[in-house]
Amino acid sequence: MYTGKLVFSQVMEHLPLHTFHQCVDCYQGDFKVQEFFCLDQYLCMAFAQLTYRESLRDIEACLRAQKNKLYHMGIRSPVSRNNLANANKVRDWRIYADLAQSLIRTARKLYVSDSFVLELDNTVYALDATTIDLCLSMFPWANFRRTKGAIKLHTLLDLRGNIPTFIHISDGKLHEVKTLDILPLEAGAFYVMDRGYLDFARLYAISQHSAFFVIRAKSNLKCRRVYSHQIDRNNTGLICDQSVMLTGFYQCKDYPDKLRRVKYHDAATDKTLVFLTNNFPLPAITIAELYKSRWQVELFFKWIKQNLRIKTFYGTSENAVKSQIWIAVSVYLLVAIMKKRLKIDASLYTILQVLSVTIFERMPILQALTNIDYITEQTTEAKQLLLFS
Image (cartoon, rainbow, N blue to C red; front, side, top):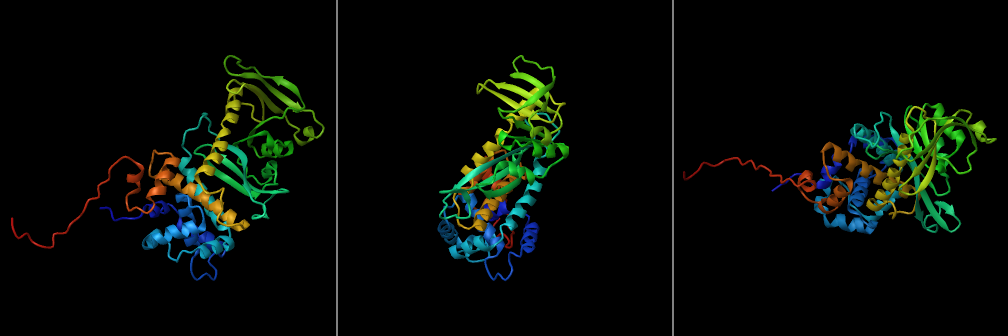
C-alpha cells in the first residue's frame, strides 16, 4: 500500500515556494493576516481549477469533506466561503501575476528545445485577444457595451510549447492594437498577428527593435510595387511576392521603409490572403506558413476556456476576477512544467482529466498518468527472531 503524498501535493511540488513568498512579501499580501494566508488561498483556488469547482460553496463543501487531508495538501487554515471570498477580494492580484511570470520563465526553458512546424531558429510568437462575456449589473467595472460587460485577455503565445509569455487583462473596450504599446519586444523574434493589429506606426516600432512581424493586410491597402521577387507557383498557392512602399498619406509617414507583400491562395478555405512583413530573406511560402501557425493561439483560447475556470468567476470584484485568471494561468503552467519534468507523454487535457478524479489519492502521480504499474517495496524490520524454522 502506497502511503506517500497526495496527488495534489505532488503537483504542488513544482510550485516554487520561495518565489511565491517573495511575491507575497512584495505586495504585503499577508500583512496583519492571522489565518488563511495567501498560500492557503492559492492552494484552494488551484484545487478549484484542477477539479472544476462551480462556486465557493462547492469548494468549501469538497474541502471540508476531506478535512483530514487538508494539512497534507498544504492548507493550514480552516476553509470557509467567507475567508476565500474575502481573500479573493482583498489580496492583490499582482501576487499571482508575478508568480505566473516566474512560472513562464521556467516553462519556456523546459520547452525551448521542442520542435516547431517550421525549421526556424527564431522565436515565433502569436498575438491575439479573446473576449470573456460578463453580466454588467454584477461586474459594473467591466465596461464593454451599454448593456453588456466583458473583459479581454490579450495573450502573446510562444508557439514552441504553447506557453503564454505575456498576458494583459483589460475591460472589453480596449482595442487590441493598443496592446502593441506595452508588448515586450525581443530582437530577432517573429510576431504573427491578425489584421486587427494593423497600425503602421506601431509596426514600425517593432521593426526599429530589430524584430519581425507577419500580419494580414486589409483590403484597402494603398502601396506601389518596387520589385517583384521570383516565386514557385506550382502547388504552393503563392500568387506574388513583392517589395512595396506605402502610398497612403498617413501610412507612408508612419512606415517610411519598404515592406514585403506576399499574396497567397489557401486551397483548403478557397480564400486569397495578403500578408505584410518586414522580413525579406525568408521564402515567401514560409511567410504564409508562419501566418497559418497563428491559429495555435485560437486553439489555446478555446482550450483554456474549456478546461480552466475562467468563464465563471467566484467573485465579482475586479481583483477577484484577475486573481482567478492569473491563478488559472499558473495552474496551466504548473501542469505543463510537471509534464515536461516527469516526461509524461499524455496531453495536458488528459492530465487535467486524470488529476480531477485522483486529486485526493495517495498514489505515485506517474501511476495515475501512465499505464505502468508501480509496486512500492515494503521494508520490514525483523525485530523478533523466528520461533520455528
